[in-house]
Amino acid sequence: MASSSVGQEKYRSFLSEEVKNTKWRFGVPNYDVVNKLFEEGRTKIWLPGSLEEKVQNFVKTWEMEFFHKIDPDEFKSIDPKKFTFSVNGGKALNLEEIGKLGGGYNPLLQTSLPEKLRVYNPDEETAASSHKVFTTTFPRGFALEILQVYTGPPVMVYKFRHWGYMEGPFKGHAPTGDIIELFGIAIFEVDEQMRAVKVEFFYDPGQLLGGLLKGTSLDGSSAEEPSSSCPVLRSTG
Image 1 (cartoon, rainbow, N blue to C red):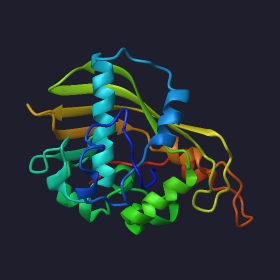
Image 2: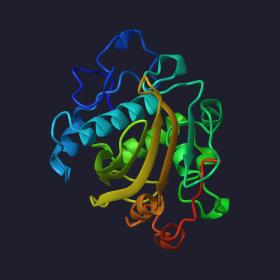
Image 3: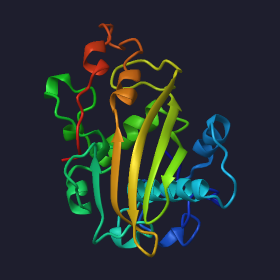
């Protein structure tokens, strides 16, 4: 959810360093618009230098690299040799396995639902198509804030909030302009160099996908409320 130019980034490390030599998936990301959304909509303002601010900025940096950098050897917030990722207690995936899922939002939205009931089918999406879907739906981005930090490094446990405004269509459903919020818990295990070696997310994807189906169907049919109200989505395995 970023354009292709960059200035001095306030919340993400490494983005202003040697960007021309970095291999970017969608061009150099620019977070000016989503940073504005974050600053206008956040519910917590952490003191500079506090544990909460450090964790929040680390997670934003991790997301930037995870979504936008192509070459794992260029990751600075991730140990590419040891890194694993899981959702809701499912199978822990390494970077190679994540790449086979298509990257982008696909590892986050893996599901055990039958294909005909899938609002968003990660099996049919690539990193590029996934990126296009969500940047179209959320033209101002999908902001992140840390609501509470339970433990600090080397095992960071925190509660988070993601939010954005559905100002574009999603999978045949018209934009509503409504705020879409997603809450959850995450566990980040880091090494001595503050690189993530293990990441676990726990959240209900139905908070995201259900809200995106409230708009009128663009083909004139009724909205598919049943498929979004209780999506039994599971791990990235």
